[in-house]
Length: 388
Ligand SMILES: Cc1ncc(COP(=O)(O)O)c(C=O)c1O
Image (cartoon, rainbow, N blue to C red; front, side):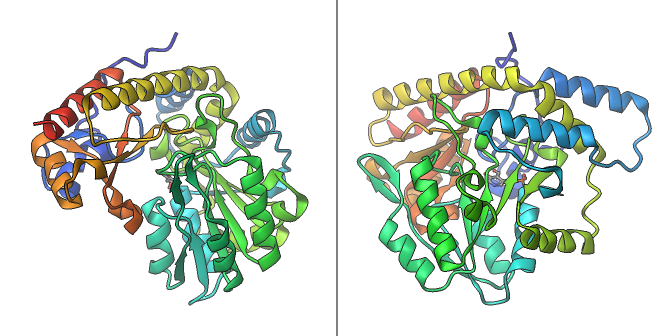
């Protein structure tokens, strides 16, 4: 019903993915399968709403309307059985922007902040840039998939961690954390007085029947110890609208966050962001279900292709989202050699695993949030670079 096969030429559209290749990779002749946005048009309801607003021709100050907030409240209640009140909700011009706001107001200089590596690069950088101490609890690559090293996780918390930045579901590993895993993490954080910043930007993209659980739904104690960050940005491919939703049932946590947001005059938000959010959460559900089926098809294709054609390269099918964490360690090449081949032989722009932590050595992240034709072309290039 929706045409996810449409090839859209994004070059020259101020797209980070397409128009920043030279700055990021030092060359332009690459098939970009890196930064996490998709190549699909957004849901028709969003397109229509943006078109209507564009045609008005007046783009003055905007605000997040009650309808827009209500569409989010209904979305999370229907999808995650998360019942939230309007006064628990705040905003951010992106979740990456929300992180320093939360860190600066809820922790002090030098405080320890925990992350689970390998993980989304800004988690590392933002902690360091804001003069906090980065503490890492590496995830374990086991026969059954990526798992939490519980002994290590608790040991780190017991050493006095002020905040835990959780990636739920996990980028780049694609893990949809189970209720039990989340509950254990949440309870341990409560026990050791560690605030949880739960980044749930990929929540809506759970695949293959996996069910996303919102950390804050697991108990009142956990809810009152958590700031949740969500957004329509990944789900509906509207990241450029810079409009995220921040939620906490804790007056203390949300109050401090809001103070910081207002101090920096970032609370007004972007006009098109508000319009997008309302239309996406109100009417975008059907489109999202179709999108997820398309993503599963792309992943299945890549999995079969790599298994058959690329000995030495492996990956686990992500339980969520559109990012493949490709493991090149079986090729016998060094990380630098793989990187060099990807760029100069395959002419592929992938994310370097080392940006996600030192446990990302030998890994590169491939974005398959694109047409199946592009996925096939990316895989053809990979084969050319790694089987000759
Ligand atoms: C885990 C995670 N958090 C945040 C972001 C970016 O969020 P935003 O665009 O809202 O700043 C991404 C984008 O890839 C992500 O994967």
